[in-house]
Amino acid sequence: MSNTSTPVLGSFVRLADLAPDEQLLVHGSWNAAERAYIPLSKFPVGAALCACNERGVSKNFFGCNVENRFMSCVICAERNGMTSAVAEGYNDLQKIALVLKLYQGPGASPCGLCRQVLIEFGRDAVVFQAADPERNVWRYLVRDLLPAASGSLRALADLEVSDRRQIGRLLKLAARAYTPYSKKPAAALFTAFNAAGVFKVFAGVSDDNASYGASASAEAVAMRTARTAGYVRQPSLMLMVDDPKALNPVEGESLQVLREFGTGSSVTLVGADGSSVCSNIGELLPDSFGPESLV
Image 1 (spheres, rainbow, N blue to C red):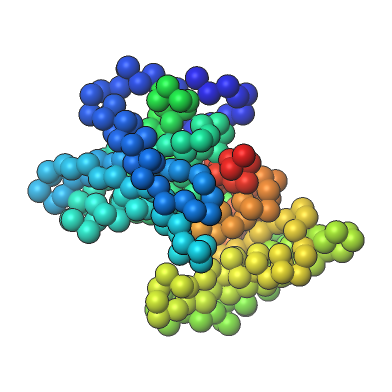
Image 2 (image 1 turned 45 degrees about the vertical axis):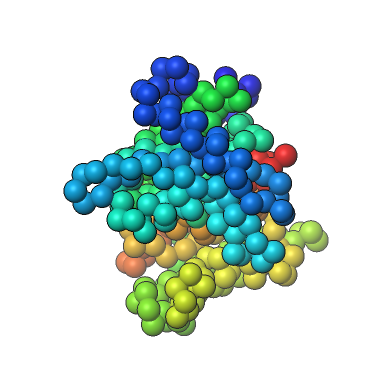
């Protein structure tokens, strides 16, 4: 069993206690990791998944991480396997096994981008995440990777004047968004301190691109602008969402960008009517993959 006191997702299950088809997926993920193309990270990851097509026929698919000298072009093992399944018409994800071959401690879980892709095709799919070199696993559901915020919904009228003013600024910013393709204008405010203790607010709006994958979320724009300016301490993010109480309220990629600032970031989710829910990166991206996972 993984030797750690830090909580991870799911329950520990020994390899021998898994069903034969599940054991096959676990072994397949380790084998896929052997084929990883990793000239940059030297960090092999493997995934093996079972998906069904529209006729209910199931098939296994495999993926490894494939890197590129331009880091934005890297594709993770989980997305590699899932997109291969979709290309063959197998869109209904049932089960997925994954392994970070060099590390099975806390955070040895899918990154935010992979979580977003997996939840698109199987919220109730079962995940078998490698727990140790003996191929025992942590078992949980895909929906657990991007949960809803647990905080109570706060009406705009019930907030302090300063909070109402901040939310008002956020909602007005959305008018500057460039969203000809998604038709979903959004805005975000990211606050942090720099090394000198100076506090600053950074704004961002959603920015679509004709190559959809090159689009940028409002929150990613704000966060990366802050990092460029050297504001990375005590971060806090406020952003527009469709429903502050919904499952997966923030896209996984944005949460992964926020995760790079550390595990202590607070998050305020704001609906179109100004209602809001307070949360944090640990709740919205549990057992998250981050810099610590690369050691």
